[in-house]
Length: 68
Image (cartoon, rainbow, N blue to C red; front, side):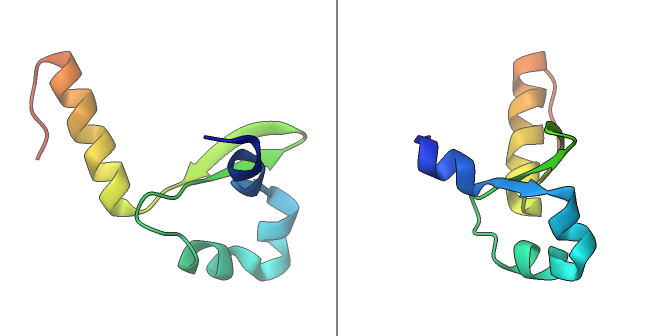
């Protein structure tokens, strides 16, 4: 990930509080993610469900289990 992409993935909690959450979420692509920043610290992430499912499956594989 380059610096420009990383910076574009950051979203201030203030932006979400200003009613822009729907626009941010609807603009996510299948491999995109947004990192929510509060008090200059990453606090949460927004990822599409398809990506979350992939990440959970990978985690389960690494732990030796399965996730469906």
